[in-house]
Image (cartoon, rainbow, N blue to C red; front, top):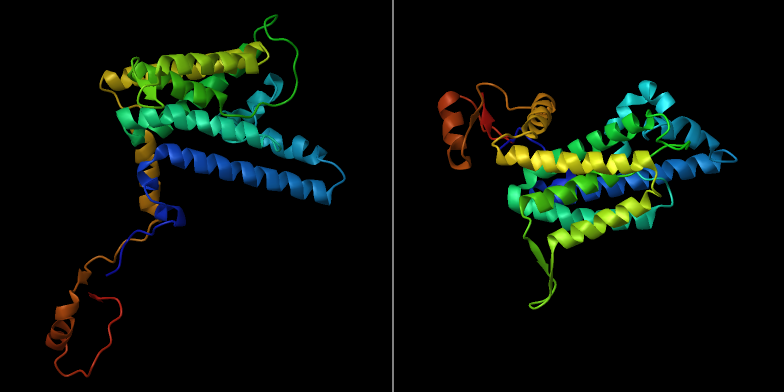
Length: 276
């Protein structure tokens, strides 16, 4: 029997379709590898990596504020990539994501994880750009920003907003409150910014997004449903569907149906199980 949907290779990973945290981790890892391979190829072909940072990075990373109007789409891309050579940063980020994201996924469902993460990245980036425009508050600092810090902070705040009394049990007798782990993560994240004001505002934007998202869920709203509706609509447009009027014939009745339809015909081989 034919099917109108095709399965991707990743769909054969057990539980992947219902594990949004794992989907983000796999996507981030693949993005890191691809980004690193592009950098390596450019280094092999050209004497240095100037072209990589001059032409390629500005298309994905949050740029200096003077260049942002011409690269506004980077609000949607900067959080999914890291600069080459940041493998251990990637590993630690994904561990934090698993820690907080698994709590969110368990308590409110896997369909809320990816929208929450995207909202946190978007508004964190928006806060970063907006604070860079404030005269006298942001020190002079060039370069580009990549990384999922805002998304991680949004996930952390969302997890503790859902269940402030949640505890992680490491053994039967030893556990830590989720609020303590979130607090430690927040302190480490702020220290990691070097107290650069726009980076701190990026964390605040991500945290506020995580808090607001959960409050909207508790109020009965579903701020992430439109994302799944959009992707499912696009998938429906590009996925071939069975022909109209087609009738699926069980294998045991196939010959009888064909003989009734064409009584004078000889033996017929049918490979699709479909008669129109």
